[in-house]
Each structure stands twice: as C-alpha cells, then as structure tokens.
Image 1: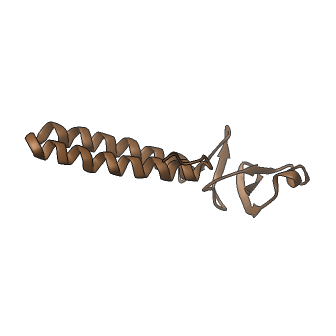
Image 2 (image 1 turned 180 degrees about the vertical axis):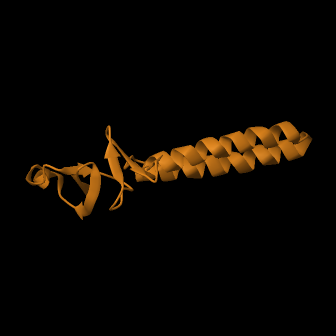
Image 3 (image 1 turned 90 degrees about the vertical axis):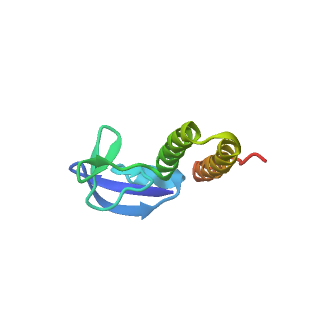
Length: 110
C-alpha cells in the first residue's frame, strides 16, 4: 500500500508499505494520489490549495460529469438520435463505474 510520510503537515516522502508494518511509521498516512510537497490537513491531502482526489474519487467525479452531459444531450436530441445518445452514454458511464470499482478494489459485476 502507498503511504505518505508527514512532517509538519507536509508530505515529506511517499513509500510502499505493508499494512502490517504501518505501526513502524507513526507519521505515515495511507494515500492514493498524494505526492511529496502536498499538504495534509484534516485527513485530506492538498496540492496548490486544491484537494487531491484519490483515483476512485476522480473516477466517480468523471461519472457524474458524464451523466450531466448525457442529460444535456438527451434534452437536445430527438427520436432515434435520443435513443442512440442514451445507449452511447450508458455504455460510457457503465465503463467508468467499472473502472471506479476496480480502483476501489471491489469485484466487478457482469
């Protein structure tokens, strides 16, 4: 697992560590996406003032964006175009959800 070594609320180093050995590094926090120089505050990592999203959070945000685009396209489309747009975006959202599940270590259905 990936851990960030924190010193004075700043990521000083990023290391690979087995969870069973985490107690040997009291200043290490499990992370996904944090890099050296990032800030660590209130249980979250920040880079240039912006929260660093984990891979799963980033994929879920993309899913939400795709769903919003789908809604907008469906409102603009007519007849068969609407059906094709719905199928196309449903497939994209399904693929994004599978990627998010894989990133989170969940079993993919289907």
